Image (cartoon, rainbow, N blue to C red):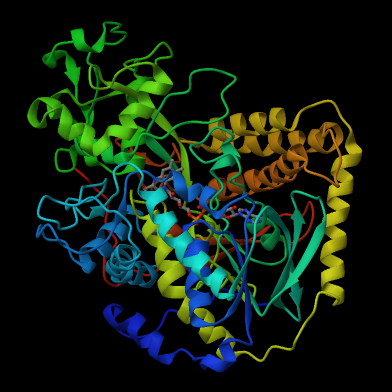
Length: 638
Ligand SMILES: Cc1cc2nc3c(=O)[nH]c(=O)nc-3n(C[C@H](O)[C@H](O)[C@H](O)COP(=O)(O)OP(=O)(O)OC[C@H]3O[C@@H](n4cnc5c(N)ncnc54)[C@H](O)[C@@H]3O)c2cc1C
């Protein structure tokens, strides 16, 4: 297992690195591809696209997901769109500009070479998805339509109303099912990966729990791809689906995969505000709404008038005021912080004072209600169903909420983790987004990884590695199965009195309070005292009714919450050690006029954490970042 971080960035100018790498990579001839098996954990956009392309290439793929259908992966929830540097609008976009915007948007904490490749393949993704029949919005003349997202001054976001993720997932899912039909992909739903199997230092299989029967099953392969999504649910309340969990990635971490930048989480500025203690989910209102919606709060502190009764000159369109160049399309980290500042000043709205307005009155006046409905109809409907208020008639109320995680398993340029043979794709890897992801770039990254990167890099691994045959009778499988069973038995034998959710909620409160939108040394240290106490109580007092040998949703949740607690602690340590502010990681001690103050001299690196054993402190490794193309500069959207 590699101990030091080798990012394996190809040599040469940034524009030709990927072309060079593809030429240099080893190939596997078609007849040999049929001899190789690959496990893909997760069938969201990243996993389904990987399984489909690897199957199409002729590999034997075994795909797994926790859902009853791959179509229920959390990718289905993506609303606003997917970026690509097509320059259809003729407004100055290019691969270089998308690369530049993404490096800057991530506050110079992403690897340049990966970001460039992402921008480079972005245009192929749109062609691929159009060929699959994804019904992207079109202009009157038939060309594909675009809109703008935060952190960009061009329109490069392709969309299918407010259901882009659903339509893309249907495309990737259909491609994967075609391969299932062709016999190259075996799909196993309702299986939760609970351990990674390592043989001779390489990832060679997984252990899963069959969520319908409770059986523990093992599967072997020549390589494993994890595409298991992000970990925002560590906050309990987030915009992620209930089943999103860190478990697959965390178990791999405990087997040797370094976890990079766990403290880089994204708090999305436009979500429906929290409305009560019994809530278990938060709803996103897509960033695309900021194309036409204007964000404001009353100028006067404590102004309780109905928004429609507050005249223009008594409103503060604070994003337009503070960031005249980007206005309402300031990136997410910046827009979220500004919303918090306004609410902290006492100018927040809603009964809680924790909301700001997103107002469409101007756009409706300019474009008409029909046009706005055509663009955002389903989002408006969703908002009205949840809040009982009609956003065509009065402004929406929104507030920031946990949404996306830039941190994840560390991968090199080839998307290979520190465990040889374990590749990581989509939101599960530490990604190309640095300390802040730009809107509409997650779908782009997941599909880039699955369709356009892994098919080459996995081929290179399989073509260049001598692998002995292994079967699930190998001792390493027995060892992993035993450890899974031991953990399940331990959980079932506690028979305590507190529900899993109550622990998850308490963890979420700690994380939001001390490792949320603002972080500081004292708070992080407090969290690092509170989480271990909560974890101890969990292992003594959690209540899991039912049986382990049957469907047991509480047992599933308990395992996930146990992993979230360990991850939460690592997030706080990571946030504590990173004594700077960058992107979504806002250390209150490091700021200039309310903006993030980076420390490039000491922190221009990826922090990758190595697990060293139960109750032992993890070791922090560094991958230094160099910026040869987009030069380090203070990020400004003014
Ligand atoms: C409400 C919302 C709206 C969004 N809108 C946009 C947008 O407009 N544009 C954009 O670019 N991004 C958007 N995002 C972000 C984007 O949707 C996600 O980052 C992306 O879809 C993640 O894809 P993925 O394939 O990596 O993971 P997921 O889609 O989360 O898939 C994870 C897969 O892994 C499986 N899995 C997880 N754990 C295990 C396990 N232990 N064992 C077996 N299987 C497992 C799951 O069953 C699932 O199949 C949005 C996110 C949210 C929450």
